[in-house]
Amino acid sequence: MLFRSWTDEQRRQLEIAAILHEIGKLGIPDHILHKPGKLSSEEYDFVLQHQHAGVSMLQAFHTDPTVIAMLTTLHHDLSGSNAHMEVPGQPIDLPLGPRILAVADAYDSLNTVKPYRRGMTHAESITTLLEKSGRRYDENIVRTLNRWYENEGSALFRLTESFYDSDRTPEISQEHRDDVADRKSTRLNSSHIPLS
Image (cartoon, rainbow, N blue to C red; front, side, top):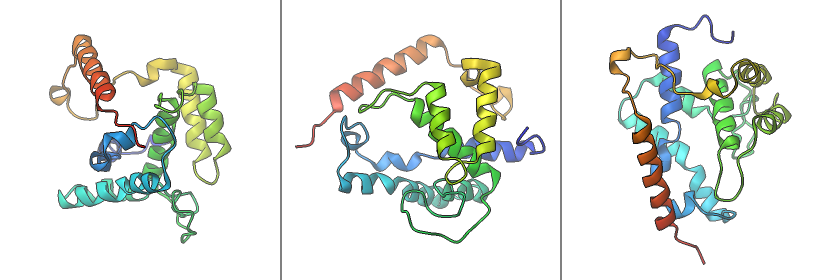
């Protein structure tokens, strides 16, 4: 297993990084985030700033430096280049945390229905990730995710126990989840502002 030798603290740091990795999107207007068509170059550049904004925010809140380091390198290729800027970087050996997070983030994004496209199936997502393995994604992590999915199916993605104490993990009823999903859907439908 990829991180069998990790301590509980290392797994907790990865979990926190996974939860906070898109916090910078708080500053992006909904009409850009949920735009049903292709983003303009200005909108795309604006969206790309979410990672920097999120890292800056977390630094201001004195977040664990290991978590910040994972988020800082999340969008780097395995070569050390920044995946969004196509600027060659210094070759670096990306730690395992950001490599796991990059695969998980991409898989989630590919599977999620977007205003401009359907969500991909598991097989389509894995194929896409494998096509970019070696440069953008760690092939071992992609293949491990695929094996986990083959063994456990969609149960792999059920809400699981956090690395925190169970006393601190809130229970969320299905009724509450449905209510949140309905409110989110209503908000998205009413807040869409078409760009002319």
